[in-house]
Length: 204
Ligand SMILES: Nc1nc2c(c(=O)[nH]1)N(C=O)[C@@H](CNc1ccc(C(=O)N[C@@H](CCC(=O)O)C(=O)O)cc1)CN2
Ligand SMILES: Nc1ncnc2c1ncn2[C@@H]1O[C@H](COP(=O)(O)OP(=O)(O)OP(=O)(O)O)[C@@H](O)[C@H]1O
Image (cartoon, rainbow, N blue to C red; front, top):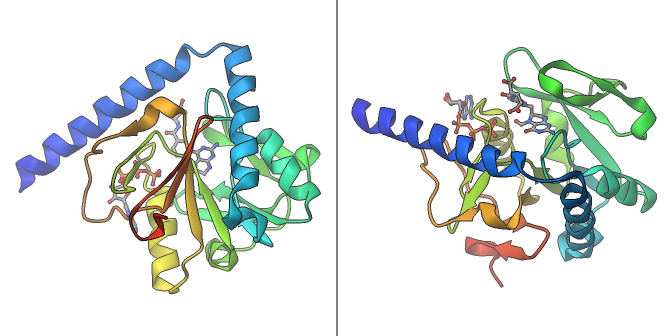
C-alpha cells in the first residue's frame, strides 16, 4: 500500500514535469492562438451560455490563456469568481472586477484585490473552470500537486452541488490514465483549443 502510493507520487511528478516541459516550448504566438481558440470553445459550451455565475482563474505563464475568456464572460454579464491561494493551500474567492483589479501574488499568480468571499463561495457557481496539467478518459485530472482543486471538488460534493466542471488544457494533455488517488474526483469536461471532451455521466 505504502509502496503503491510512492509509485503514484513518482508517476504524478513525472507526468507534471513532462507536461510543463512541452508547455515551456510554446512561443508567444502559440500561446495567443491557443488562448483565442480555447476562449471560443468555452464560450460556446451550453453549460456556460446558461451560467450566471462562473468560478474561473487567471492563467499565468504558459498555462492555456484565460485572459480573453474572463473579459468575454464579464462582458456577457456573468458574475465571475477568482481564486485566492491561502497559506494552507485551500482557496478563497473574490470577484473579478477587470484586469486592472488583479495584483501579483505568491507563486507567480495574479489574484483579485477585492473582498474575500470565503472558501465556500465556489459552491454558488453554475460552472467551475479548473486549471490542470492533464486529464484522463475517466475525467480524473492532474493538477500542480497542492490539492487546491481537489479540495474545491470535495467542497462541491459536500454541499451537494453539481455545477459544470471543465478543466482547461492543451490538446496533448488528454491522456489515457493519470495516476490517481482516493481523494481524486472526476470532472465532467475538458476543453482544449481543438476540442471539447465529455466524460462519464456528462457524456452526450
Ligand atoms: N493560474 C492559476 N491560478 C491558480 C492555480 C493554477 O494552477 N493556475 N491554482 C491551482 O491549484 C491555485 C493556486 N495554487 C497553486 C499551487 C501551487 C503552485 C506551484 O507549485 N507553483 C510553482 C511555480 C509555478 C510553476 O509551476 O511554474 C512553485 O511555487 O514552485 C501554484 C499555484 C489557484 N490559482
Ligand atoms: N479534499 C481534500 N482536503 C484536503 N487535502 C486534500 C484533499 N484532496 C487532496 N488533498 C491533498 O492534496 C495533496 C495533493 O493532491 P494531488 O497530488 O491529487 O493534487 P493535484 O490534483 O495534482 O493538485 P490540485 O488539486 O491543486 O490541482 C495531497 O497530499 C492530498 O492529501
